[in-house]
Image (cartoon, rainbow, N blue to C red; front, side):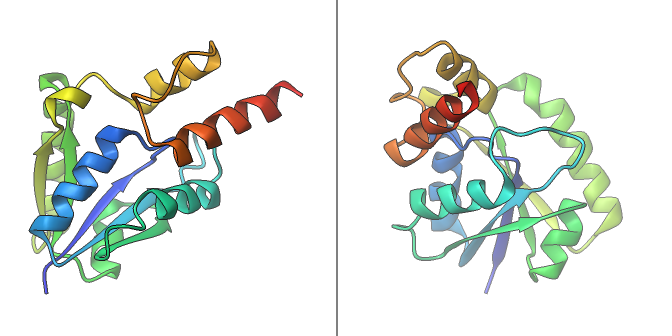
Amino acid sequence: MVIAVYPGSFDPATYGHLDVIQRASVSFDKVIVGVLHNSSKSPLFSVEERVNILEKATRHIPNVEIKSFEGLSVNFARSNHAQVIIRGLRAVTDFEYELQMAQTNRVLAPDVDTVFLTTSLEYAYLSSTIMKEVAHFGGDLSRFAPPEITQAVQRKLQEAQK
């Protein structure tokens, strides 16, 4: 069984993230989406909220599991017996950083490979940051993520305004 992990902050997840998850689920026996708890950042959603949102958004994909983690992606991969780390690429600007991380991970864990999946063109512009910016100014989020995610973003921003 070939297990892949797809680590990220997913704050919030977008159609681009879901595209990578869906495509990875076809190529690997099991895909574990790792929601990173990064104490140096102040995310919109807690780790638990991000896990719950992603579970709802991926419930139709039987070989996908959502878990939270802290620390290095290679350690998360190893603790889940994964042979592969999935990374999504939107543009050339992502590549240099992602290549450097893949090479570092290869030094730390020679038994774990990194596979890059380019985001579908229709989502190449999209990021969690852009989605939050549009949401902050009341823009339409329907092209960025499914309703279970966009509604959660809108609720969270409304709560913050109270």
